[in-house]
Length: 135
Image (cartoon, rainbow, N blue to C red):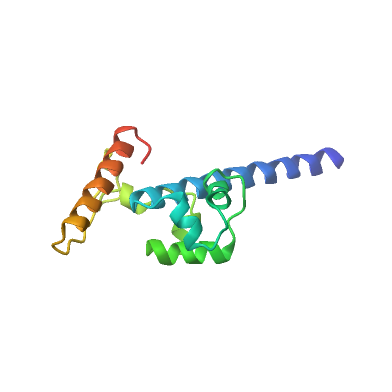
């Protein structure tokens, strides 16, 4: 009985570690895709410094529901997308098949050079992630 309980505890810890890892990856991808720094996100969440948020992205801290809701609102996604263990829909084509490293991105432009430069910078970062197969 004791060995069985230890096995259950180890499995639960393993599952928790895996879930934290998926959440950490999702948080990082959403942040990078939108061009935000960890410092900005930490400030947005009301953290004293960026290391509190950084621990979420490293899988070292449990994501608080309050923070998950705030981040989902900021990223304009469902909370489920942040905590999902399945890949983001954006990495798939319309027919559900892997899109060979290609994604579609909508860009909002308002005619200002600042917005244009910001989007170019963001697209370059996304392209770099795709090149390194991190997205």
